[in-house]
Amino acid sequence: MADLAELSAQQPVEPWDEQQENPKPKKQKKPKVMKQVKRKPLSAKKAKKFLDTKLNPVKLIWELENTPYFMVQFPKDQRDTFIPELEKIPSGQFKHETSVDPTGTGKFLPEDVVFVERWQFHQSDEVMQMLAAFGRKFKFAFDGDILVRAQMLTDEGKQLFTMSSAKSTSLLKLPSLPKIKVGKKIVPLKPYHFQRAGVAYAIRAKKCFIADEMGLGKTIQAILTAMVVKKFPILVVVPNTLKFNWLDECQKWFGNKMWAGTTTLS
Image (cartoon, rainbow, N blue to C red; front, side, top):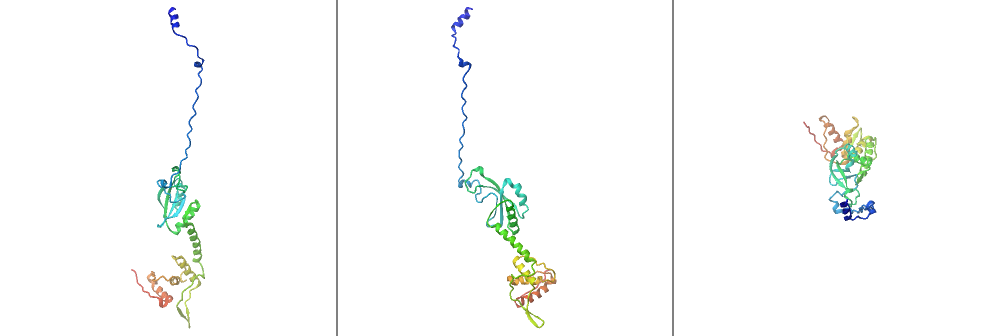
């Protein structure tokens, strides 16, 4: 017992501290808020490294300069919508992928870049009309006069269809025609009204088939068309049984202005 008393006397008793039992909570530090930094758009010079800045907007149809092609551009993520429609248009094929600036300003953030596909189509009147209909349906932009030309083709097509079945026309001025003897009179050759209409149609169409019924003067219409447009010499390719019929008709309608020869192809 004495030993314990001595030990307790040697060790000083520390005063009781209330804070040790109930320590004060530490203040929590507020999380740092990152300031939003305004990013400057790329300059036009740097933009060239990211994309093709030549054309805008993203959905576009245009005529490729110095080539016989039309181009169609659309967002790559919408290819499932557009490709089935484009495959219905003749001569279409995938050209390449690229990226474009949707703002059209040349100054943009890299994440704003839109990746697109480009398809090319060989130029023809049919393709131009189909692309015009496709572009209007899906609200594409057009660069150049494609829409105007397509509309002109549509209007001209309607006019040609009407002319192809016309029975007469006042649009055709024929050159002076040779005269022939009818009974005791000498009168100039004169085509029928429907033949004049056929000639007017052939001149307007430039390439066509004269498909009238037999005996209505398809040969005469072809000869008169050549006379009006004055495109000589003329090569006529016909079955052997018809070459002298053509020779007689040419001599009749061209008169002294004609030189002709015939040959037989085996």
